[in-house]
Length: 396
View (cartoon, rainbow, N blue to C red):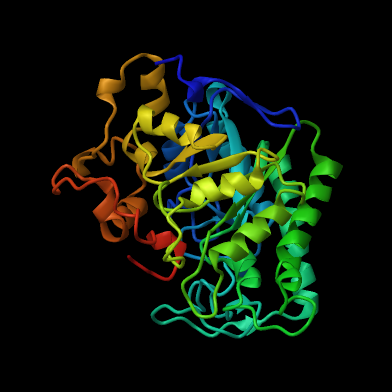
């Protein structure tokens, strides 16, 4: 119903107004050209899904060639990417949907084949705990400062391209998280060791991006930060570490925090005695000081409303927007009975899902895509399990 709270506008402190509180979550399309330029397939995919949600966050774009994480990834590493990014922001901003560009450096979560012969880099020369992971090169002091500048340059390009904000991808085991993690960060200088030193890099990136926004944005431009709640390696990030970091992030100048988990009701998996959902604990720490975006296995209008009632400011949906691009429009028209919660493989072209993404969904996410030819399963598969994008797998 239109009276639901999630259909009401939301205003950030810097003045940017969203027409509703529904966010399309960032998702990998694997559909860009080999050099990171946007393709017509991607533009068609976003065009079909824009116009409904108040805010659409793109799949992640790499800020430097050595930070590329996978084939078919969007780039924002040079001015070569600007023309395509302008087309992308224009495509998303139909019917007043706000366009947010997610940016990152993959760190050790890539390989020398993707990097065309270059070795991955990270905080330390420690490989990820996954099959065939390469040992990255430890970043030098000068290289760390260069990457901080790369984030600032990427933000400037996002402003030039017409986006309404950027989201720093500090989740899913990528470089910002790698500096925070005691597993990937074994440094003994100012960038590693203590909690304060391990948070120094992400906070420096935030500060650099903020200064870029202040210098170049001529209208409200928001800065978000995405975070993963915990790691399962030993040593690794534990949920209490994350809550402490979130306390720091609330005063860092970001405009919102975005939690990355596969199910909105998930509890911490490293805390056997703790049965309080992750989202609820994060919300308590934030205490309304900055907006909190969350999601994970949220599909129906009632589930979106319940998520807001649990303390979220905005609700993000990913897989549901793949299956149902017109989710918001159908809610607006009181046509909720026509919302797709399953998808047929023969509809994927009609839904403008790029061919490479179709393969990815079939191979890596088939279990949770709810294809019509598969047996229907309860929507709680990530309630006691880490989602694939979160990293090292753990189940209860």
